[in-house]
Image (tube, rainbow, N blue to C red; front, side, top):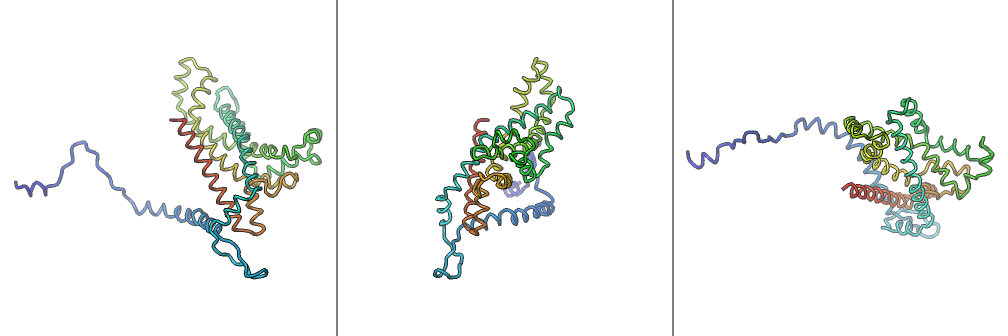
Length: 307
């Protein structure tokens, strides 16, 4: 056998060596992927790109009464955003809202999920439905309902609402927080409860053999094992907090303390209604970046704690 015969002979795989499989049915994979890609492009990437482009435009006129036209202005709109005090006041307002409301909401959601998962609680189906039912109420309807309950002249609890003005400048933010908490506790509870159901029963049995009671199991096993669900719901809550719009917009009909720039999204809505679409687009881009930074920072912080 010559050297050329050896080099040209096929190389045999060793016994037991894993074989690399080529992906099959590539056409079917592409067929199922294309619809998502098209929708993702049309309703996500293109609107984001258009908003960024719109935020780069400014309006110019030829003379005092000339025809307005949009021209490229670079970062001129973002300079106006940085100088807009009401917008940044609204950002700090919703951040304060989130610092208080999100822990309260997720704490109640965790408590309700632990109660539903406890063997000591009877009627789980009823309580699961009762806790989740507020989420089935649209946010606008919930805000109208609570607005009537908080209004001194319309509420059936007039003695309470006249003694405590829930729609005053000092309390209206927390009245809105009450509405958001009432609506979304059940939604977050279901996410955490689903994570509790995924915990293997063998873990509980081993803990009971070691003499752990229900409180010890909840504190040392259940809560640590649903930590990823808590991180997920926290990120959802951070995004929802910065996008707060429906509830304060409804509360404008009940309280003069809620202005058109009460939250960042209300500022965007009011600016676009002027109309000043370019400045509204700049507000939206800055708000989206702030949401991304806060969510990413929280995710990195939790990952570092886990490590």
